[in-house]
Length: 134
Image 1: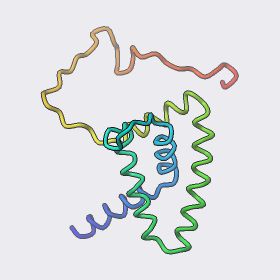
Image 2: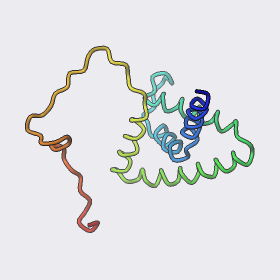
Image 3: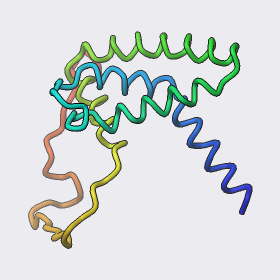
Image 4: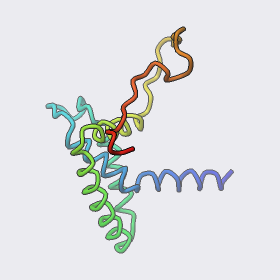
């Protein structure tokens, strides 16, 4: 039981210190719409995640902190390059939105299936790359 708690804690620490995840969160927060109040900010959850990552960083030793800063800088440059492309920006934003905790449901969910679809995702539009890529 104790080992599972330690393992879960190590996984959450690794998740918080993932440089690409943190860089993507910071890029998402800087590109989010600004509002007057910090409580009504659409990226409030992302800001709390960044604050937790900063707290986790402060617990590192000097050399580990320097290494984490260098990795974060490289990851941020890479993420900013990726965000130049519209489709990649949408994919990165979807990644951040999927990390958010689900809102508690107030009522039961009614599931509707398309009778014409042969399989899941059959009726969705497929985005193909240009022909030069194949």
